[in-house]
Amino acid sequence: MADVEQKDTVIVGGGPGGYVAAIRASELGQKVTLIEKGDPGLGGVCLNVGCVPSKALIAAGHRYQQTLDSSVYGISKTDAKLDFTKTQDWKDHKVVDRMTRGVKMLLKKHKVEIIDGEAILDNDHQLRVIKPGPKQFMDNDNGRTIAWKNLILATGSRPVEIPHFKFEGRVIDSTGGLNLKEVPSELVVIGGGYIGTELAGAYANLGAHVTIIEGTDSILGGFDHDMVDIVVKNLEKKGVDIVTKAMAKNSQQDDDSVTVTYEVDGAEKSIKADYCMVSVGRKPNTDDFGLDMTSVKLNDHHQVIVDQQGRTNVPGIWAIGDIVPGPALAHKAFFEAKTAAGAISGKNTANDWVGVPMVCFADPELAQVGMTPDQAKDKGIEVSTAQFPFAGNARAVSLDSPEGFIRLIYTKDKKNVIGAQGVGPGVSDLAGELSLIVNCGMNVEDVALTIHPHPTLNEPVQEAADIALGFPTHI
Image 1 (tube, rainbow, N blue to C red):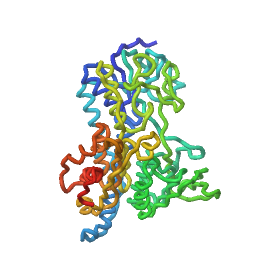
Image 2: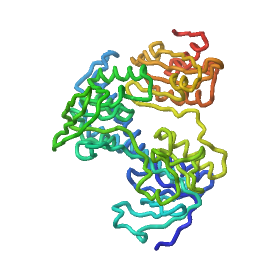
Image 3: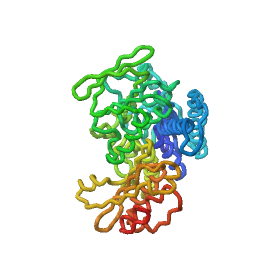
C-alpha cells in the first residue's frame, strides 16, 4: 500500500474548469496539484477536440467559399482547390497545439504540480492516481495515494451514444467529425443542436452534401424561431437537407459507407453516406472514477449538487463545469473555477450571474443571454422588445452580411434589460457586451447613452436601445 501524500488543493481534470481553477488557486496562494489523465489532455474537450478546433474548420470553410466566389466585391475567382490534409494540419498544429502549449506554460508559470494519470476516488478524503488503462489489472500498489485539504472535481462531459449508433468505424462523434481525413461527399448529422449545426455548416462550406436529422420540430432548440429561421435559410442555400421530427433508428456500415435508417411522418427512410456524425448531447463524467465511493450527492441527471460557490455536500470537495447543473459551456466553467478557487481562499465569490451567454457559430452566428420574451412571460414579467436589423448597419452592409438583428428584452415598468439576443455577422463577439448589459442590470437608457464607434457591428446594440426609448435614428 502506497504512502498517503498530503496535498493542499487537488484538482481532477485539466479542462477549462480545471486549469483555470488551478491558475486562480495558485494566484491566491494555494499549493495546487492538477491530475490529468491525458484524454483529451490539458485544455480539455473544448481546446483539443471541441469548440476551438471546430471554429478553425468553420473559418476554413468560410475562406474556401470566399475563394470560390467573391464576385460581389468585383473579385474574379481562379482555380480554387482545397487541400484538406493541409487544413487539418493547420488546425491541429497551428491552432490546437499552440493553445495547449500556452496552457502548459501558464500552469508552469503558476507553479502548479501536474500529475499525469487517472484519479480514482477511494472515499471522502483520499484518491489514487493510476496510469490510464483497463482497471481490472490495477491495484492499490499501482499508483500514488493522495489526501487533500480541498478537492475540486472538474471531470467534464462526453458525447451521448444512442442505440444502434455505436461510435465506431463510420459512425462518429463530434471528435471524429473534427478529425476526418477527407471532406466527405455525403455526411449525415444526427442532432441539430449547436454542435451538429456548426459542423454541418462547416462541412457544407468545405464541399460536402449534408443531411441533418433532428428529433424535434426545429434545429437549434433554445434559440427563438425567428433567429433560427435565418440560419435554416442559409443552410438550405448551401444545399443542406434538414429533416425535423425524425427519429434515427439504426445504422449499417461497410468499409466505404454507412446507411442510416430514420423514421419521419410514420415512414421509414434511409440515406447512404460516407460518415454519420451523432451529436445529440453530452453526459457528465460523474461515473467511472469512484465518485460512488464518496458521500457526494448527485441529482437525477447524474450531475453533482453544489451551492453557489461550488461546494458539494461533503466538506472540502467542490465541483465545477459540465458535471454540475447549468449549460455545458467552457466560459461557465471558467467562471465557476474562479469562484471555487476564491471561496477556498475565503473570498466572497459566488456563481450569481443573471445569465450565461450562449453562442452558436452557425451562418450567421447566434448569441443570447438572459431571458427570452417567452421565458419572461412564463415568469409573469411584463416585457417589451426592441430590435434593430443589420440591414440598417453600414458595417454589416459593407461586409455583404446584412441579415439578422439585435434584440433587447426589457421590463415595461423600469426598462431594465433582462435579456438580449442577436443573429447576424460577428454576434459572437457582441455576446460579451450583451452579457455585461444583462448581468449588470443596465437600463435601456444606459445602453443608449453609451457611445458606440462607427462604423462597427456593435452599433445595433445602441440602435436597439434608442428604439426602446422611442427615438430611433437609422430605422
